[in-house]
Image (cartoon, rainbow, N blue to C red; front, side):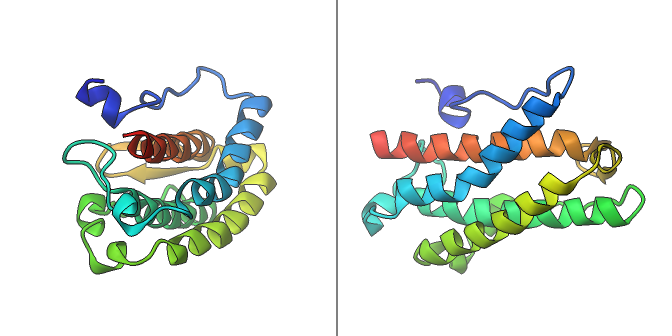
Length: 173
C-alpha cells in the first residue's frame, strides 16, 4: 500500500452532484453508528495496540479516537453557529497539535463516552433539519469558501468512515 492509500484508505471525500434524501439519511446513519463501531474496534485493545500508528509517521489509534472527539465537537458547534448566525466564519484549529496534547494520551474510555453523548445530540439535530436549514452555510477561512450544512453532513459521515478505516488498518498490521 502506498502512502496515499494509507492516508486515505476509503479515498478522499467526493461531494455528489446531487444530495438526495436517501444519501442524506445514509450519511446521518453513518454518523449515528460511528460511536458504537469505534468502541467495538478499540475497547479490547491493549495500551500497546492503542499506541500503534495506522501508518508510518501517522497518529496512533488512541490519537485517532481523541481526534474524532475533538473534530466532532467542533463540527457540532459549527452546525449550531450556521443555524443561528448568518454565514459565520468558523474557527479552524490545529488538529495535529491537539493530537499531541496530554489528554490525547489518556485511556480512550472518556473519548468514547464523549462521542456517544455528542453523536446522540448531533444526530438529533441533523435529523431535525429542514431543507432551508440544510442550505445554511458557514465560511471556512482556510478553504476560503462557504460550505453548506448538507455537504458538511456528508463530509463528517466520510470522516467517521475514514478514521474507522484507519483504526482497522492499524489493527491489521
